Length: 214
Image (cartoon, rainbow, N blue to C red; front, top):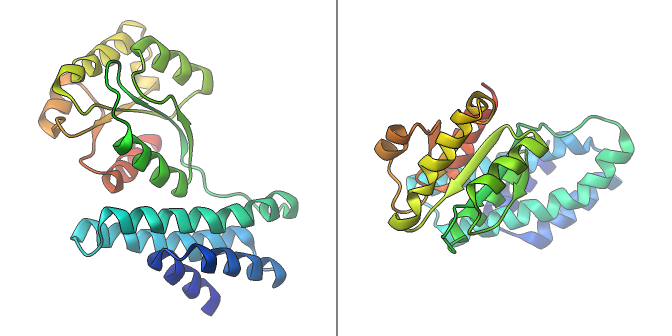
């Protein structure tokens, strides 16, 4: 369908107005809103992710593409709810937080945006979040994945505390933990017993999907 290709191209271009216009046209044409999102807008975002990883696109362009997709999806969501035609594929619930003592949340916010456009329900606890608060919220919402970030080596130490606390409570298997942030490495993530590591937001989506499906 040509309109689905146009939607993908509008996302790749980061064209908010075009995404909104195409979404409204899809409603007028009685197209399946779920199909429109998954085969139109989401396909465009998948392309953006690949281009970002290969260095063909940069962070501002990826952010603009995600915002464009979100704008189109926002138009279609009421149609999904009223049509009963189905529901968006949901990979699960992710609790996100910048770890205790760390006030940096730009990276986390980018991860949040991409996870949301990829079909996850996000609970964002913000920055400087204590380990106990992260665990409490994960239990409350029955999270599929916990994602924590740190931008300082001095705050990274709370990440193993989180994992250790989950183990001591006997609920580590219920809540896989993925970690990230500038000072965090894959080797260190394995060393502390994290279930996943991603060096960037695109990788975080891939890791979260894998963990949520276990």
